[in-house]
Image (cartoon, rainbow, N blue to C red; front, top):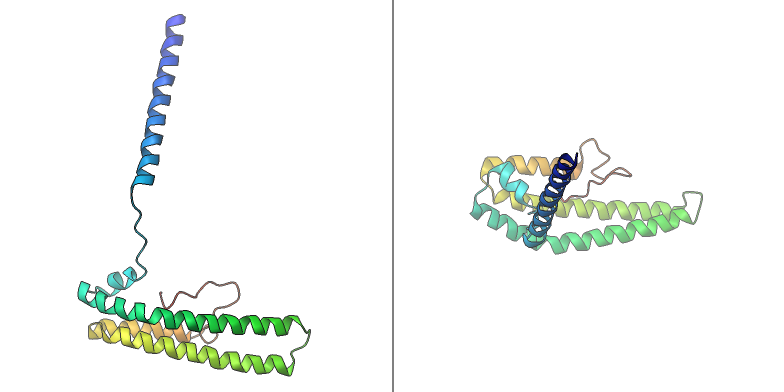
Length: 164
């Protein structure tokens, strides 16, 4: 009776040791392996089969556009906050709300035009067929054929700077 009990205890001790060793090695690998942030433009390379030189040109355009995009996003967010403040202050749609909506529409149109110019520049750095296909997809996403003028619906998270 004593020997089987010792064998079971020994087997459990060995299994526990193996589990602990595997856990410690996995934890060490997680902390010692540098994580490479995902490349937000990698989808372009894959989808359009672009060379390193083409990607370098696109990356320059993208990095140059990011500050413009961020500034426009701040303007849109500020406008949205102002509009939300007006709407929260009244139970009716006032003339001030209607005026702010009109200004917001102009701002969103500026944003769309800016995005389309950027996408067109990117498309012109690609081989002709890929560029046409890229620009067509970016137009569809920017102008939102069928999705309320390109603006995301409430609760959606579609602000991805043209990424399909």
